[in-house]
Image (tube, rainbow, N blue to C red; front, side, top):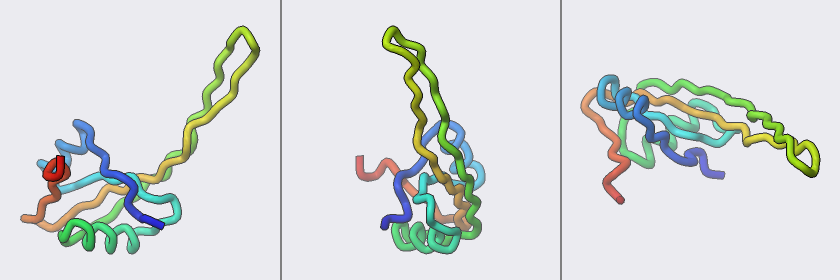
Length: 96
């Protein structure tokens, strides 16, 4: 099971990374803060100072169509915001 799923690359997270050395990741729902810290340190070669996690539940949606009511939902997501040590950086765009 992989702990890190993908990085969060948005305007808000890019501003946080430039100002406060904080980076966002979508992580597996069963991962705890220690596993997230170890995965980021081994993957990117940086020192992690702090890990904050957020659980987002599924978003339920209803569509009214000709054939009837269509019910659906999105997947539940766990996000982690990681603060790394001063002087370390993570470059997500190096392998594009």
